[in-house]
Image (cartoon, rainbow, N blue to C red; front, top):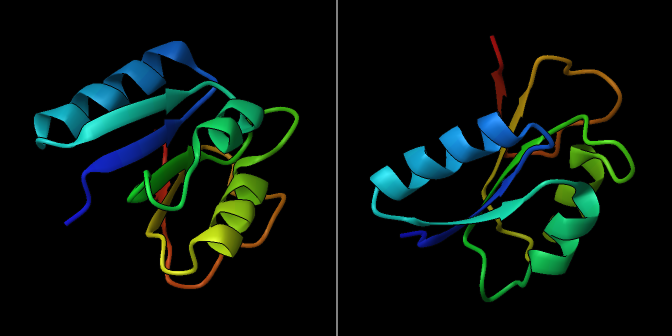
Length: 99
Protein backbone atom coordinates (compact mmCIF):
# COMPACT_ATOMS: atom_id res chain seq x y z
CA UNK A 1 0.00 0.00 0.00
CA UNK A 2 1.28 3.46 -0.82
CA UNK A 3 1.88 5.84 2.03
CA UNK A 4 3.61 8.96 0.68
CA UNK A 5 2.09 10.73 -2.31
CA UNK A 6 3.94 13.43 -4.24
CA UNK A 7 1.29 16.00 -5.27
CA UNK A 8 2.53 18.36 -7.99
CA UNK A 9 0.48 21.31 -9.24
CA UNK A 10 1.37 24.94 -9.91
CA UNK A 11 -2.05 26.16 -8.77
CA UNK A 12 -1.93 26.56 -4.96
CA UNK A 13 -5.65 25.92 -4.44
CA UNK A 14 -5.68 22.74 -6.53
CA UNK A 15 -2.51 21.51 -4.82
CA UNK A 16 -4.08 22.17 -1.40
CA UNK A 17 -7.31 20.34 -2.29
CA UNK A 18 -5.35 17.43 -3.74
CA UNK A 19 -3.19 17.20 -0.61
CA UNK A 20 -6.31 17.30 1.61
CA UNK A 21 -7.91 14.49 -0.40
CA UNK A 22 -4.76 12.40 -0.13
CA UNK A 23 -4.53 13.05 3.63
CA UNK A 24 -8.22 12.17 3.97
CA UNK A 25 -7.38 8.73 2.62
CA UNK A 26 -4.86 8.26 5.40
CA UNK A 27 -1.85 8.90 3.16
CA UNK A 28 0.90 11.48 3.58
CA UNK A 29 0.91 14.19 0.90
CA UNK A 30 4.20 15.77 -0.15
CA UNK A 31 3.51 19.01 -2.06
CA UNK A 32 5.49 20.52 -4.93
CA UNK A 33 4.54 23.62 -6.91
CA UNK A 34 6.65 22.90 -10.01
CA UNK A 35 8.71 20.23 -11.71
CA UNK A 36 11.95 21.28 -10.10
CA UNK A 37 10.47 21.05 -6.59
CA UNK A 38 8.94 17.69 -7.48
CA UNK A 39 12.28 16.26 -8.55
CA UNK A 40 13.95 17.65 -5.43
CA UNK A 41 11.27 15.99 -3.26
CA UNK A 42 11.32 12.68 -5.13
CA UNK A 43 13.14 9.71 -3.73
CA UNK A 44 12.60 6.14 -4.96
CA UNK A 45 12.27 4.85 -1.41
CA UNK A 46 10.30 7.81 -0.05
CA UNK A 47 7.51 8.31 -2.61
CA UNK A 48 4.91 5.64 -3.31
CA UNK A 49 2.64 7.48 -5.79
CA UNK A 50 3.05 10.51 -8.06
CA UNK A 51 0.10 12.74 -8.91
CA UNK A 52 1.14 15.52 -11.26
CA UNK A 53 -0.34 18.26 -13.35
CA UNK A 54 1.00 18.16 -16.90
CA UNK A 55 1.61 21.86 -17.56
CA UNK A 56 3.86 23.24 -14.86
CA UNK A 57 6.18 25.70 -16.59
CA UNK A 58 9.83 24.72 -16.70
CA UNK A 59 10.00 20.97 -16.19
CA UNK A 60 6.61 19.55 -17.22
CA UNK A 61 4.60 16.88 -15.47
CA UNK A 62 5.41 14.57 -18.40
CA UNK A 63 9.12 15.05 -17.69
CA UNK A 64 8.72 14.65 -13.92
CA UNK A 65 6.92 11.35 -14.50
CA UNK A 66 9.56 10.17 -16.95
CA UNK A 67 12.45 10.98 -14.58
CA UNK A 68 10.65 9.50 -11.57
CA UNK A 69 9.92 6.28 -13.48
CA UNK A 70 13.58 6.05 -14.50
CA UNK A 71 14.44 5.94 -10.79
CA UNK A 72 11.49 3.81 -9.69
CA UNK A 73 10.16 1.74 -12.64
CA UNK A 74 6.98 0.52 -10.92
CA UNK A 75 5.94 3.92 -9.56
CA UNK A 76 2.18 4.47 -9.92
CA UNK A 77 1.47 7.76 -11.72
CA UNK A 78 -1.71 9.79 -12.08
CA UNK A 79 -1.68 12.74 -14.49
CA UNK A 80 -4.17 15.57 -13.93
CA UNK A 81 -4.66 18.42 -16.37
CA UNK A 82 -7.07 20.51 -18.34
CA UNK A 83 -4.59 20.39 -21.24
CA UNK A 84 -3.52 16.81 -22.03
CA UNK A 85 -1.24 17.72 -24.93
CA UNK A 86 2.48 18.28 -25.12
CA UNK A 87 3.89 14.91 -24.14
CA UNK A 88 3.44 11.18 -24.04
CA UNK A 89 1.68 9.37 -21.25
CA UNK A 90 3.84 6.60 -19.80
CA UNK A 91 2.47 3.05 -19.84
CA UNK A 92 0.42 1.90 -16.87
CA UNK A 93 -0.59 5.41 -15.82
CA UNK A 94 -3.92 7.16 -15.31
CA UNK A 95 -5.01 10.48 -16.81
CA UNK A 96 -7.72 12.50 -15.05
CA UNK A 97 -9.03 15.62 -16.79
CA UNK A 98 -9.53 18.72 -14.68
CA UNK A 99 -12.91 20.38 -15.05
